[in-house]
Length: 263
Image (cartoon, rainbow, N blue to C red):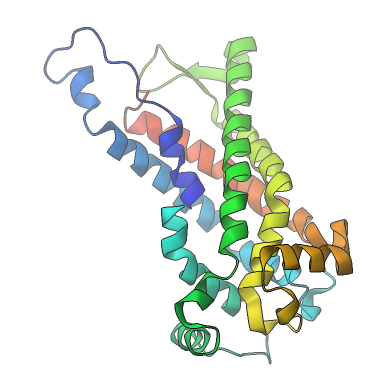
């Protein structure tokens, strides 16, 4: 959600015209950043809703839940405790209900895992993984969009609905470019995601004391499970999750830019 909303900051506002009458282009560009942020937020919500059911299965895979062996910055800090509780609840399967609900999970983690600090296990790999994921994702999408419109504008592009002088990618091309960008970014940052999830699960896992820090967790996962079955466990499923998610996010954002007259 945070990464998708950050799309709003990826595009600078268009240059202001030399002259514009009242109610013209200048008026439409009032509150540009607010409308841009709104576009990114809506894109993130749509993307998250699309793949929410797959998130739970991914958590189970990353943490090697035995029931599923057969299955192949500010905003983040503020919402991290919610993500922690969500992961704990998602990891539970029938017959293993350590937590009876959200409130019980909050109380138990606070009481047994060091107070407020207990809600921030795995924050470091989360922050370190954000930079390569967001950077590679935006760079890849921007590069594909630029190259596509430069070399095949008629085949891949069309005039923007809010500004005929600006070319935008056709919807199905947007989906394709967003999906490719998401897949590449996930491949690079995935080990950080695995590390974060295992740290978040904490005392739920038997190897809890061997995974207290990010480096200990990385060493443990690599040493006991290797690269393919450890650091990249569940990646194939994550492609099914992240490709449509990023495709929807980038496409929705591009459409919202036109709807809110941001081009």
